[in-house]
Picture 1 (cartoon, helix red, strand yellow):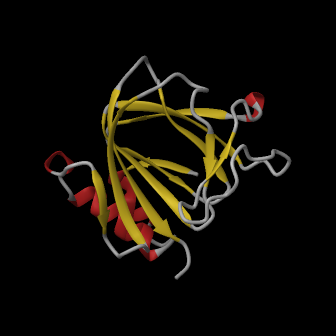
Picture 2 (cartoon, rainbow, N blue to C red):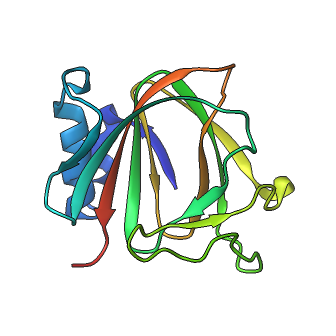
Length: 157
């Protein structure tokens, strides 16, 4: 997992060409002018999901992991807290892996003592790699209306 601001995006361009493209798209796009929805940047290899929501109490959402995609989660406006921990090999998922959605859920509390919680504010992004279990959309300093862009970066062709 990586947390930073777009000002430092060049530091991560060598990780993967699609990560570089995702961060550049975030830096060069005015998301206040776009409707929520899915925007293909390179077909299914790189696409953005724009959403608007209100944060929820910690623990009301499950932890999630992905196998085929890296998540680049960028806060356009508002703020949220997310839980993070490496995917626990001993924990049994609460849902079967959905190959079409590249999504698997783990019940909360997974292991509260080992989870870390980090705040993201407007202008910040987080990179979640496969096996980075994360629980987004939680209250940071109380309820917040959030506009977020999640860019899905396919790892392999």
